Length: 596
Image 1 (cartoon, rainbow, N blue to C red):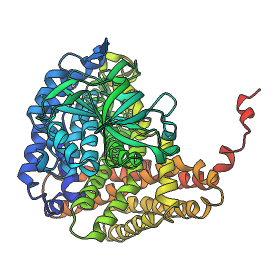
Image 2: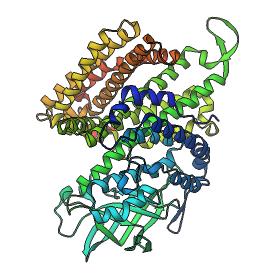
Image 3: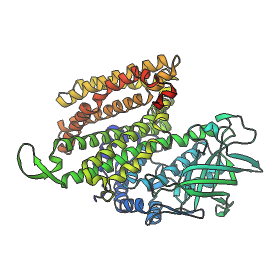
Image 4: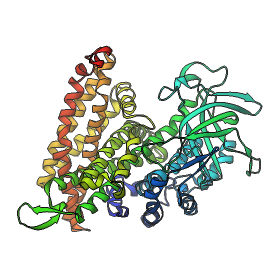
């Protein structure tokens, strides 16, 4: 079974040539993100992923986490791996220095997060949720709450969770029934939450639950939701841990994948909770954490794709089967066969496109937070808001396709658990569901990010695509010109769909929303082509200057061309589905689905 090796050359190329790391390092507070520092971080994170996390990925999946009388034991090796994670200071990378963090850009932390997830998705979920909780408290928590919790959470001594879902309240949080009653300086929280990732575990000494609940006099619906911190152990005034709080894990779920990650049913029985911000504004605060988590889940799509690709590539280079179509003769590795190459190129090109888009969005997050110009911050945040559902939805849907292709490359051996290929597909399957299904992401994209603002931000992005087209036109490379025509058709497809959504959402929202998921895929495909086209131009420039690894840059151009011919080519068809597909979606009465 091949070991994970972080694609450091690819990561550095994207960080520097596409995401603009050097420009971010000039923003206030990011001066420590020097090339030497970032390179050192990437090298150490790569070692941690390969030497510590990857060896316990398969065994952790086989063993799974175990529940007994309210306590959860993670698989062998996880506790030691988490100790080494804390000692390495990995959780502190993007946290502000005043809370014990290193204050590095989100972009740098994103590259590290990708490595951890590729090496061991189940393990990485605990730090992912903790980072989201930290970010929410940084932006919305009182000074007292920040002083009590952020230092320990940045250090990794305490972890964080997000408690939204209840048995009767999934996506529709208006149905939340958990109650919070004021009791002096705190609240008493009572209710049940389900699907809580790392809601109970043995990795850290305390777990900080962020819980959505209602106060007795709260308004109905989402306007009456508040956010509370409910720690597993209460914290004394001196910062030490006190008695156990009334937050108990009743069970953990038995799942298709991510077996080593405990998914808890949490019961709160008059648990002491502390209000975050103001009453009845909890949903807005939780969305801070939710957006962080949605971006992180999108990155999981990238990570699982990279891991599935590496495993499939290693197998294809070793597996001897069949004869060469031209030369004949002896048996050859299956990578020599055109269809296997097609599958590997689908895996490689889409993984690179998703990674580039995710890193560019991460850089925009940094710009939105730290740029000194208010208008630049606002434009960057608008771009982030537009692209978060695309990163989450497109990357996770594509991640499942790539993990499935990985099994196909293995042939029958891919269906056998011992090769490891099947685990990637099982683990990837949840990513399109949690933190909002693909349909929820697509509805957010169409309703809030396109229709509500008249397509303004989308049109700014389309203008960027048109500007890039002018740059592509100046290239003398035949492959880049072929890609240019595909990308131009994709940009036109997006533009037509945006006009359709803006014009029709108010008149017939069902028609617009019927094509929401195909539109999200269209956005992803075109955004991925946008980034690969930029990568091809950067590679062409490096080749002309005779800089760096010529084979690497030639591969960038060839990969971009493949993406254009095999993926971007889908854009006009997706446009047709968005514009004309609603009639078929809405044609049947409910009883007609029965077929009786």
